[in-house]
Length: 197
Image (cartoon, rainbow, N blue to C red):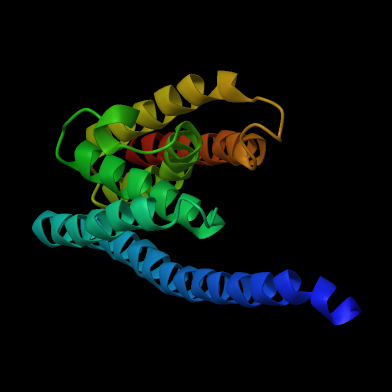
């Protein structure tokens, strides 16, 4: 008699097991794709620093295609790695925009979450510092100062977003890092001015 009581449980567990296995497989596939999108965004950033904008945009188009696919397929999976891919995408698109003298795209234009947008822009400051140092190396003070002003404005724009950690995890730390990077960059620009005098 007790075996009859478990009849529905056994079939339910078998069905649940099949669905869970499908989720695990979908999750593993999504993780691979998200990592590829992150790698492509990183390559786009690297190519941008080498002033290979066309190739960088090609990598970003491929990354965006993967991200769009992941948005649809991972809604149930709640993957952190998708958030990281979105942040990297924001950072790469923003860097290319700045390098081309265009306005940084909005959240709506990039079709990302508020958190990914804020965190991606916070990471952008490190890439801008790298560009400032390259312009200092080239002895292009005006370009270096312009990029520093962009960094400073970005910090001032993001600083009020220091919400509780639970709202945008990691943002407070990134804003602290932004402040240090700004100070170091100002120091480098000051030294450049002293060496030129």
